[in-house]
Amino acid sequence: KEGTSFASPLRFARDFPLVVPMVLAIAFLIVFPWLWMIQMRAPEFLSTTIGHDVVERIRSGQEGHRGPPGMYSLMVWGTYFPWSLLLPAAIVTGWRNRHLPTTRFALAAWIGPWVMFELIAGKLPHYVLPTYPALAYLTADMLIRASRRSIADLSTRAFKLAAWACAALIVLVGVAGPWAGVILSGQYTPRLAAVSTATAIVAMGAGWAMARHFETGRVLAAARAMGGGMASIVTLLWVGYLPVMQPLRMSQNIAEMIASNGGYAARGYMIDYKEPSLAFHQGGGLREQPDADYLARSDPAEWPEWVVCTAEVWDNTPVERQAMWDRIGVVSGIAYSDRGRRCDAYVLRRHPAE
Image 1 (cartoon, rainbow, N blue to C red):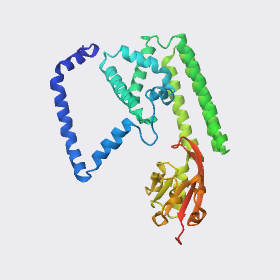
Image 2: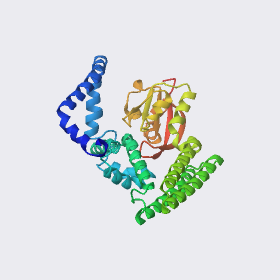
Image 3: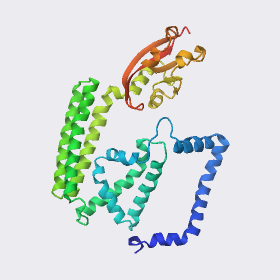
Image 4: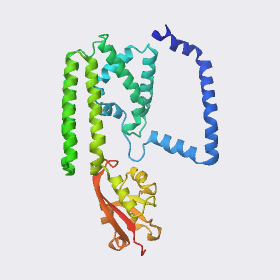
């Protein structure tokens, strides 16, 4: 009976003075040996981790990743799409059934971390992903209850209108999104055309089926249409579209250009091109140089062998200094870590004569 009442929380409150110290002691015994070994090997690690990566990120954000409180509550409508259509009903149903242990755990696993991430200054879309399994549980629980007619949240006229609006959005994004990428990139290849067309067809079918099933009260059939449709769209995009969409593959293309010229894992700088993925593709030798005027003002004796910079940096470099570099090639595309701006990245190798 404790699972269907508030007996468990009340008992926990009664045993709080005994339980909490025991839990903290067990956690301390597990964690302390690791902390001690880390401190012995790298004395600066813990202070840097706590001060720089935790305190500063909470207080001011870092690397331009700053957002106001409430940002994730707005972004969830896109990042949890299409299930965000069901989010209000899932949260309300979960709160009504918070006396159930599993539901109460899901609420706690969602609410606590979510509030923390909303309050800290540093924000990125993927920070809240650990809370999505809890949201998925609440959503699935609500769908099952709705299919058994134990709740009426999905049978209202307002929800059915919202379902048709969501279906229209799925169709719009599924049809216009891939084709917009093809048109903007100028890559009119048969593969991209076929994948874009298939994505549009799946989006139209899934959107119509979802809205129609919600209209007729077939809740689980609507959920299958939502899940199957999105899984099919994601598979098409990840397997057939993104691997050949060159503007989104700048880091891979730059790394391949460097490797083909014998520079795999060679040390160098990224200047005004801020894609951390390049270091992984290139072998770990490239690091970001924060000074955009590095080539124009630094001592050439300190230059590394390789540099990847934007066209703006290269154009602002004096001609006599440009002559000290071999321009291996140019890679054009979208720097999605830099607010999605389009740029030309120059791959430079220091001239052997220098």
